[in-house]
Length: 245
Image 1 (cartoon, rainbow, N blue to C red):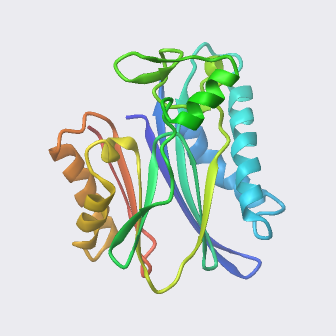
Image 2 (cartoon, helix red, strand yellow):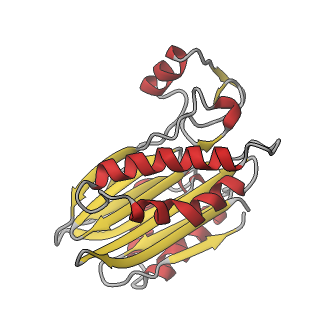
């Protein structure tokens, strides 16, 4: 099991702040565990976290990646990890993504993806990789250098020139239409479409029960990957579960 997740809630400068993150490790668990232990801690220390949240997230993601690589400089392993995070500051939701974990919101029953998977065959990602001198090739699936099946990640020192940790960030103001939020590793999304995830999560009142239902559905549908899922609803903020697959 190489997945980790993190959930934090606090008040900063009088504003309610909630942070949710899914970290799907590959090649080992050191990178994903490092993100669990450090990413949100670093973000909340950023001097512009409240006043310019998008800049704070972008800078923190990339600096945390550098810090992890520095901490691993004497190791021969080359762990990597995705990160899909949702940061709520007041009524504003900031979803930042690196890799192929995903965050989906439900507004009035409609599933809306707030992140786009970083796959090597995504046209803009392929162009970025090839412009940097890399190559995208088919090896069971599309892979950077024939090795990595995602185009952005933390860690992965050997591919760092091409596999960056710069997040894509979407901002959305939440209103009464907001029903729930689902963050999950690709062990869920490989077999459960966005619309199904929202529909299944809505059948459970408690978010923890909804997260459990989603992980069980992914396992039943044949997911062979690690499955980690967080469900967030407006009334409660204690909604996590994790399952080996």
